[in-house]
Structures are given as C-alpha cells and as structure tokens.
Image (tube, rainbow, N blue to C red; front, side, top):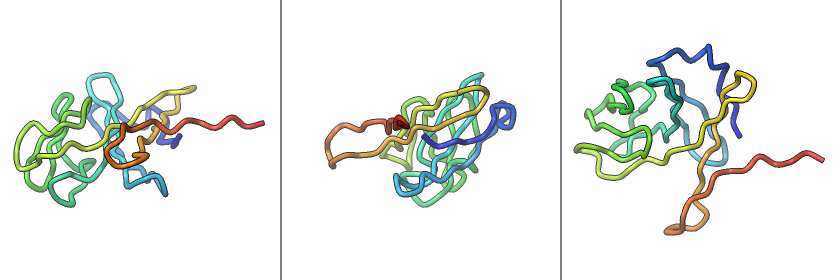
Length: 120
C-alpha cells in the first residue's frame, strides 16, 4: 500500500504521480467525478506521463499523441495506443489516499493486488 496524499490535497479534476518503487513503474492517481482512480503513469504507446495528460470525465488523454485511456479499466479508446495500462485499487483511510499497486505474478497469468501485511 502506497500513501499518496490527503484527499483534500488532490482537488477534483487533478492528478498526481507516485512512485511504486520496486513493485513497478510510476502510477498516476486522478480525482474525477467524485472518485479516485489509479493507472500506470506511462502511456502504453510511447513514453509519456499520463498524469500530465488532460482529464475528461473518466478518461485521460495522453499529452504526447492524444491516445485516450479509460481510468476505470485502463483500456485505450482510440489510436495510437492499442494496449491497456494497468489499473490499481485506491482506498481512503482517515482522509488519507492510498494506492494498492497491481503486480504481475507470471506473464500471462491474472494480476493480483498487493496486500497490506499485518504487523505482529
């Protein structure tokens, strides 16, 4: 689980980029239409930061070549992007926003969310 920011620090219509560390690449977190979404920050078409793109409802437009990605599924809705980006679970605990990065276990197998480890 990666802490992102307090919910009041991510206004409606804005985004923030967070590093997932050894789990994977950067993640873009969006606040749109009253909900929070997280997807891989790097466009699947070419190396561009989606957190720097334009937010249109539940879609983000890549700033490089205008590919549009659905924040709910990670699916591209137009060319030039053909491959989806990963989505990640987002939770809010006591006003703090957290991302649960999705990691691939074995290529071709389903993805799983990273679980918070219990502290004994």
